Amino acid sequence: MNHNVFDLSGKVVLITGAGGLLGPKHAEAVVEHGATVIITDHHKDKARQKAALLNEKYGKKCATAYYMDVSDPESINSVVAQLDRIDVLINNAAKDPKVKKEAGLTPDSRFETMTPDYWQAGLDAALNGTFYCSQAVANKMLETGGGVILNIASDLGVIAPDQRLYRKEGLAEEQQNVKPITYSAAKWAIIGMTKYLAVYFATRGIRVNCLSPTAVYNDHPEEFVEKLTNIIPMNRMSHIDEYKGAIVFLCSNASSYMTGENLIIDGGKSVW
Image 1 (cartoon, rainbow, N blue to C red):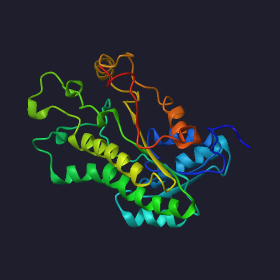
Image 2 (image 1 turned 60 degrees about the horizontal axis):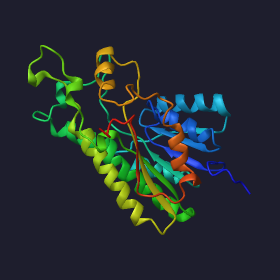
Image 3 (image 1 turned 60 degrees about the vertical axis):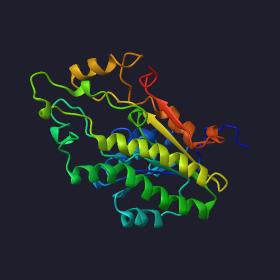
Image 4 (image 1 turned 180 degrees about the vertical axis):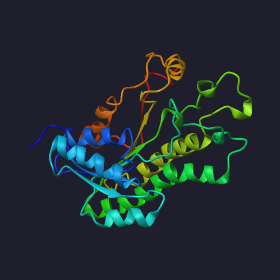
């Protein structure tokens, strides 16, 4: 009998948006504890690249890549139908405009002038994608004895973004970049969906929890880093590897009596 409650040997973990920044780290975390991963992304080349890197690092059969558009139920169902079982679903896909040195946020993100298309695209990627994927995979889990759904939300799902972080001196108000309402609305709703599904499936073998990280350092502009670290009690941004332990905990039997919870890991940012 295996007494390692963090062991994921034999488990199949499907990760959405796994061609991005944190998705591959979620994959590393579960593979390091014995799981095999299904790497999905609407950027097919990125999914294949991440799966190849995992197979090179951990073993040739630990990762498989699939094209998946989380805003399209048919795309999701096509992937799910090809899999015998899915023990864990990590809903990681989202549309998150980033602060970058040469691109990222634009004034298009402003509430006053946001277009219906911009709004819809933000909800499609995160909120609708989480619903469609959870629905398809939960039905598969019910057929095979249950499982775990882990939704990736954000600290901006429990607090509002501090728009001062994105301001630039000398720009008129209508030209200032902001973190868009689409991101906050989607992440708040995902936390609510987590609670709903946790109760809905509580006696049917499916646990549903949520992880809310904060910004991960990824070669951001120095000015932005300074502003952000000043509003984080630990006085630094998170490192890309600092969520791996939480991922394993939430996906494994280590959290066997935990459902409907939102685990916030943000250096204390949402505390003060």
